Image 1: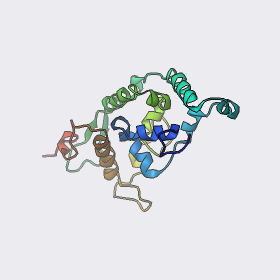
Image 2: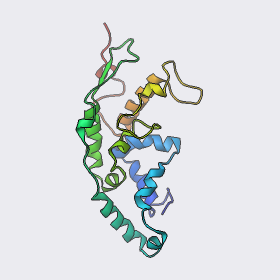
Image 3: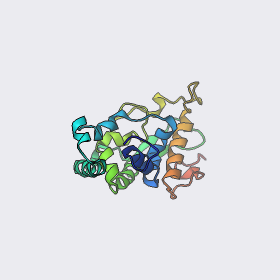
Image 4: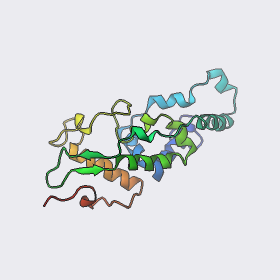
Length: 194
């Protein structure tokens, strides 16, 4: 049930799904860091060992997935900022008016197409962790600059703020095949200063 490289295990199936275009934009961080979210274990491990032993694993997985999918609640969009202005590094370019709510809603639309995603992403703040990684789960996560310095990479390997912003946005667009904003189209996100 726990082998990541098996298509006959829950975790293997989940890992394979996380590589899909709809999921990879957020999940690529987890594969890079090797960190697993221990909270996700509770999704399936709410049963006693006796209940697990007495059941056919495939049927149990199907029933669990079906039961858990019914608990999914749609996102409360009023709690998501519509625009986030990123101006901390404005130099050659004007500040970026990041369409935060639009991006989050596009991600939620992808989640709602997948029974598995609805099971593992029932908590709205948990979805925020795709971008706001390595910080406490919250609907008001800390600013990127609280972990990423303005002057470049840190000694522990964290990218600088500019690298973090660009790495996050560009990599997500590449993994999720978002073609409306090309990675090389700087002025699509922030106008050049005159």
